[in-house]
Length: 297
Image (cartoon, rainbow, N blue to C red; front, side, top):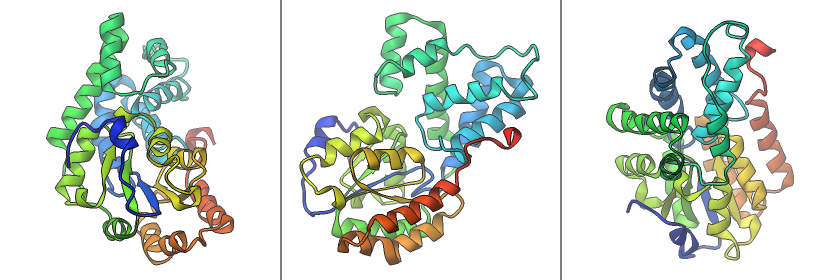
């Protein structure tokens, strides 16, 4: 499996089957999202923005946004903005003299329409020289390096491993993720899963919605396209492309993957993954992700 996939690679995926499956990676195939957030992302947020005084509250906000809320699985930059916004409203922080991060430059970058990732952020830093964008880039690069150098090996969920092998035998399949490509390729290679997917699409190629659209539009019937994921962004990508969505509910990963292997995939192939079944699994998924953090309820 190569590195540095391009949009052209997405456009030219050879069609071998009449069915297409996109699979998210972090927190979905691999139980790595919690480790990445708690051991790598959050300590480096505290370090780069000098938030030691409110480190406990920062971690609580970041964990809620990235792991336990309806924003789970979103790109790191919007997630960081929402973490800072939630921190500013935290009851232990609001009204204190704690110096909170400035977010104007981060917000402008997010709203720029650019594909959110280190390549475009680097270009924006070079173009503007903005000190807050420089800090943002330094943090993002540090996160990637820390994960690459220091993250402990996280195996795939047992039933997820079985599912990837099963899917690859009967459908065209790619990884659809907002994780940087380099980290994805390393992880899928490490566990010998790369051979079962044609391509790994990371944040460098745009949003998950864009990944699915480019890879499937005009090639597959919508009801023969399935997105598997553990976050609302995965469901959003499926809905935007009139595709089906199978959720891997946080905290219920093995059970969800087992049901996929023993029930859902057969329904998908047989054309019986109907509206009622879609609603049932979507309702379960919705119930697993609260809208408000515990301290606001």
